Length: 121
Image 1 (cartoon, rainbow, N blue to C red):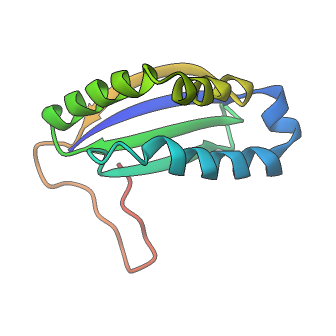
Image 2 (image 1 turned 135 degrees about the vertical axis):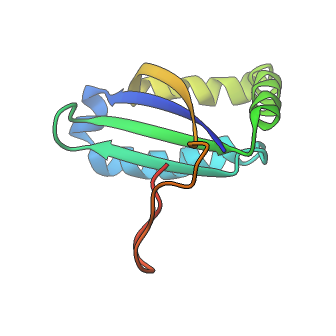
């Protein structure tokens, strides 16, 4: 599995209107990933100590080919004026800090305990 990881800092608007921001994020996730079936899973993390008001978005792909298909599909979606207009409205809510690609380790390390524990990427 490989993961495309984005880090974003919430804007002043987001910090002052958190209820509105979280509602926007829920809707954005449904909208953004609707036509990107090669994305296997998406996880969000919110920093509460250290880099406060920083979000991480982890999008999982089966392999590099799936990530390549994502990049190609995203390029096609960006060519749609309406879609792109909606996408760039995210700049009202966050500022991109950085992005990276990470992968699972080549050996079976890590664990999750019980039903309520969630596996971290």
